Length: 417
Ligand SMILES: Nc1ncnc2c1ncn2[C@@H]1O[C@H](COP(=O)(O)OP(=O)(O)OP(=O)(O)O)[C@@H](O)[C@H]1O
Ligand SMILES: [Mg+2]
Image 1 (cartoon, rainbow, N blue to C red):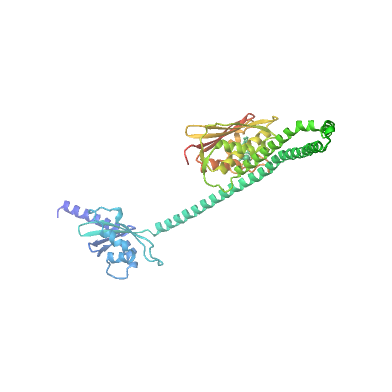
Image 2: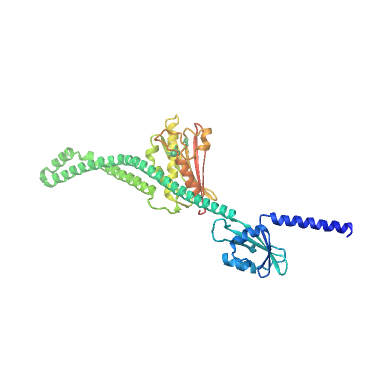
């Protein structure tokens, strides 16, 4: 051999040596099979991975696959790829029976190397499978935590609503008490008046015709009939007004609490504003006037009425507290509604103390409050935001100026969400 041939031979020998070394060290099993699945050559890793799973000395890869994975042979036989190409669908995961020391999952990838031979690459995916299982378990745990969190949030929402309704009920009882008192006073006045009118009728019926004029004059005076005549219509009117006030408060309270209606329904937001302003009267009447500026043409939007009532109540109560904290005597709360192209807006404006710059970023945080224990728990705005944003796809934000006031704006999409 000349020098050049020697060099080529020595290069080939060293390439072969490197290749053999590679086949020995590579951490995947490499198996060469004939077209019938008979194993012809395998590297040490393949021996390590496959032999413990195979009792027979003659290895037939198809027979072997059949034992562990009925779909494995079909996947390999269906392989019609070109030589040297690996297709993703030629990858088969084999799960041997679980025994100590045996791999849990083997991945086989088939590559056609000639018309009559193919090559299998076998890797131990047990670690991957273990990580996958762990990940799936974490995923399930996370889902369970999220579910629990959702349930807790619903319970919190319900508890806050119950607390608000309970507090309102006390205020409403107070509000109903005043009209009830004057209904009672007017009814006893009317009762007395009717006794006097009936006494007049009796006197006239029973008197002697000759003394009729005297009896009439005497009884009119004695029974204070001219005075009663003047007062009776007003007393009756006042009693009726009182009954109207009471029934308006009671029906507003009934609408506000909305027991049992959990689904979203087409809602007239103006009505919700009116209802909230009525039931919350006791909360604001000592510190503020409440003005409504309602857009008469506001379209109905889909809402869960009880929840939106809860939001409006939180905003009105906060506005009343802010005015109570401000230095001025009495303030004004304005509740307004407006229609925009793709959303409707309800704003609650107050001329109270304003929100200091340094706490603006935190007012929506759960349990953030600047109020003394017993007068605020810091849940109002957090729950309001969750109702408006998460449950209705809307927005809730505010603008505020110290000693000038604050406006909270709730925007709800007009399209159903
Ligand atoms: N209109 C407002 N004017 C000034 N400060 C406000 C206004 N609304 C909210 N805040 C501030 O934001 C804080 C958080 O309000 P939020 O309604 O969440 O809780 P809270 O009113 O303190 O308690 P809760 O509503 O649970 O009874 C309030 O403590 C207050 O400092
Ligand atoms: Mg509040």
